[in-house]
Length: 494
Image (cartoon, rainbow, N blue to C red):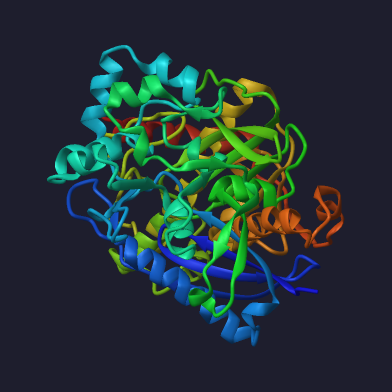
């Protein structure tokens, strides 16, 4: 009997590998940060080869750390930063340029042209998405237009496209499998979430050759075999989902109406809408939550582009803290921000504003403003942005109940209490906040028989911690009003 599922959790700033036991417990974790590349204003890139090497190093690291043999692994599950776009040579496997990261805003002008042409409804009806540089489609077009010779090579069938999951699968299988799962396909702005196929009209409009696109497969099922030369033995790859859908599954949000919020590099609020691809009137996205067998589950999603990344900014660029953990103590050392608000619109604003040209602002500075006030304002900004998304979701579907939280920043007790206060809602945090990684493991595990199905997953234990609101309604409204004023300062006015 195999003892573990290996989850490869390829994130925006680090690659993680987690080993899960049949009990659902994480036996070990290894995390490796990798290079962030900022070649221009609002541009963000990664080295695709470094993405792969860091992920393999993390996987080998966790095996060594736990003393586990590759032969003890039943299957691999993959979860990944979504929308990040990689094009590579089909023969050599070399990327044609750096990966263009989901945060990158270089195609904002291109998107604006499509909006002015009145194509918003065209894209929304087919893909469930808004026209925005966030998604893969215009990133692909930019590469085809701007990297010499790539369009011609693509049209000759020499180039492949993939999001990060697809790149990892292709590399792990030695170039034998060019596939992506339904959740990642639904984030490209090229995939029709109703017909469940790449959309020929969209491909024609954008001038993207269909031959570069991967096969779309279920999130749970036989995807490929990891080649023997990677870990020393062949291991089946049986699970794959974009990070936020994986977190929804990992939080066991299996019922229609279940909601989770993940605090990672960005912040992502998702609600299970069951078999219905529910449309939003308030700037939320309709996306595929997962596919198991022939059954497809959908979700509504609100995306905050900068959440945990703002804490990283405090540490790396502003040098105000030495570690993310320090932010909690500093924030709690002052009663409030002293009237300071920070809108971390470093790469535009996501839901419900969808303004790619918005830029970060700090308002309310006085001579008495100190380091702790700035740090606290950044943490509060994460909560305010989440509140904006949740209120938009409530306008679409009605009042929500408890919100389940996960992700690195969810371990910050100050942030979670302030989040509960500013929402006026209960927040539930699981003992294991590795929801993204365990979601990928669950999807892989039920496909290979490691777990019998969703019913067994529900029975897996785990304790929860609750945060309940204690802020007065008048104080909450006052705080939110200040936030709204600050956001107006950040918006581009377009």
